[in-house]
Image (cartoon, rainbow, N blue to C red):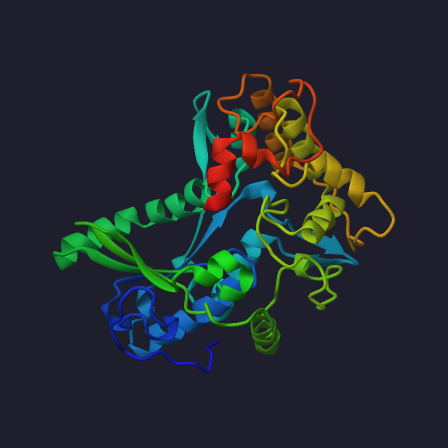
Length: 364
């Protein structure tokens, strides 16, 4: 699968047009990030065009940083199975023409009682007593970027020894200007790492591609998209969630959150337990308890499907979160002045006024 767009061979400074951002045959390793969402494949196809045109397709790898049970899982409806995010990322990689052995999946883990076990983001949140928010996003840094860099460390060391110089990597992201004002301002090309081991160029070749163009391209290519984007699995109408990240993302729109609460009620209740025990709302604009209540009202979005969230992986998450909540929180971002410790505020629209951390987050 290849797009009709071709990238030239050129050099460029930071912040230039993503279509004229680097010399493809000077890149030693292409890292194509695939989340299972709609934007990664569009960006990956453009980067692959550049690599193929330069004759360096063998330097291309795809990678998926799994968030485990916090991702959209697979569902079966009417005897048809619709893949979850991790599986879909692998399907996208194969559909783009990347060999299976060059697709990598990573997931954060830690040692617990002598055993290596998954370390899920919600467990971390329960331990910390704090939720990710603008400017403070461990879900991106520790659960994605750090893992992805680590996955290529051994390859970088081997290439550096072979080449006798720092290894040049293109970290290809599906970030687009259409997604948010912040992403519109974010450079489509910038150098994020430059040391004796590696030089990493962060590249968003689909930065100027519109949301509708991404959807049209996906459908034209016959590429499967995440079922959560539809009103119900298999509808193909793009009338479900507008974004595909964590099922319950603190930065999601209100409609997406209400839809996710109705689609994954057991997960929503687990989030509500964390905010109830820690006394910190899900985000500065709303609490999970409020979202659950609003999702039950007439006129809330029709979920199209309700996921039971049964199985050992979700049970392990639930057990880890409950165990974390039995211990004191390591840090709490926000406590409203005058609010009893056992009372959860329904919202905290004004929390920045009394909380320097939240104020800094909002300015970021």
